[in-house]
Amino acid sequence: MILQGKRVALPPEPVVHRQFEAHVAATPDAVAVVHAGRRVTYAELDARANRFARFLVARGHGRGAKVGVCLDYTPDLLVAILGTLKAGAAYVPFDPAYPAARLRLLLGQVPGLALIVTSPATAGMVESADVETVDLEQLAGLLADLPATAPDADVTGDDVCYAVFTSGSTGTPKLTAVRHEGWFNLMNWLRLEYGLHSGSHHLVVSAFGFDLSQRALMTPLFCGATQYLLASRNFDAMMAYRVLTEHDIRVVHCASSTLYVLVDWETARGGDALTRLDYVLFGGEALKAERLTDWARREGNSCTLLHQYGVAECTDVATSYDLAGHDPGRPDAPPVGRPAYNTDIHLVDEDLRHVAPGEQGEICIAGAGVGAGYLNAGPENRRFTTLEAGGEQVRVYRTGDRGRVTDAGDLVVLGRIDAQVKVRGMRIDPTDVERALARLDGVREAAVVVTYTDAGEAELTAFLVPAGGDLAEDDVRARLLRDLPRTMVPARFLTIARLPLSPHGKVDRAALAAARVERYAGSGTS
Image (cartoon, rainbow, N blue to C red; front, side, top):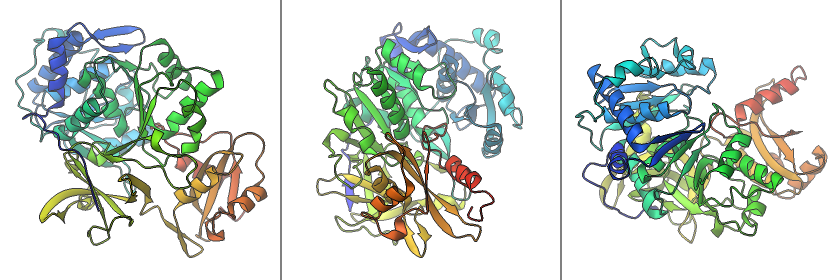
């Protein structure tokens, strides 16, 4: 089974920052960035980025180099990113929201790291790195003496523009590289397919280290619009909603769990900042559509919800679906839609043979968005492979996700192949249990994690956020048994006030598993 995206021609040099430079030439006085009341124009941002690019080139960190960036969300962050791209190098996010131990681990996973860009607030976080660190504030005098024009750097669509960390099955973070052509194709698709323009102002609400944040940061500058940055290292729902209310923001990119928080915030206060948006582009985890139904049906809600699917290894987004077409009463998972421009979805069996229409298969992504591979993971680069399609060998990335295609031609993601666990001898995907729990009256939100007894046996623990009153464990179990076989019903049900979120805005399952262990420590069942 193959889903093919529309073929759209790209320029001879699909280089991301060239599109930004075109807006600099056309509208130099337009506002590029707003942060804590400070406004930076396209011309000002371009000049600062050009000077930093010249600094990098003079140090020998041009085409092919990897430049670490450990900065909070400020205009300096965009100066560092654009300057790195203009020098022909690729940037690597080191998210200052991460714990110190996590940052130390990541710092050792970048082969050939040239230097790290920091600020006084973040320099201490990467002091363990065995590379030079530079502070843009301290460099201000030196940079001011450099020309404000871009260096003569030869950059092509095949060059790597950024590399982000993604979790690895071995426990070691993988560093996956994205090419200019793929990133350009993604933003060009968003611009053309959804009509994004110079008025499509964005607000970034996800953490810098998240793959989603890279296109969230650059898309408004690609379209000639304004980028709004929160003056907070971690997601702050109150601050985000205030910015949405006070400014003419039209687009937000976020993880599904972050969207739930924003919707809850708006619903509790009777506001309309979200409903007035043009688009929310979201995904990254299994969607609980019922969390959005009442809000989405509010009178006057003009916001289009785009449920998207993709992976960090393939420029973040491969498919998109307008959630208005989904019936929330259906028990099956909401679709993630059809492929982006110049992108194909292949569903294959374990021998990489295409499955028949309607059958489940592993989702493989092909086309312009397929990345350059992992920079620090030898064997796992086997996930970037080729398969035969139409008599030709096509380069794909094997996602490890299960999927099927509906009769309407939309992709549905069914869960991770490797997320299935054996519980009491039966293979179970916790996502299937979460969907069943979310359909029960009185359950606002649910997350199911795999935990282990002292004897090493796997079991399921469900964490429930009630919609109103208390949830009785025996009652929830009895109602769940009406829909699921006994082998899929969790061993325990724990009621909590809210699901914890990771810095990326997704449900923090590791924190839930740790909470379960702490709850039952010493009981003989943890």
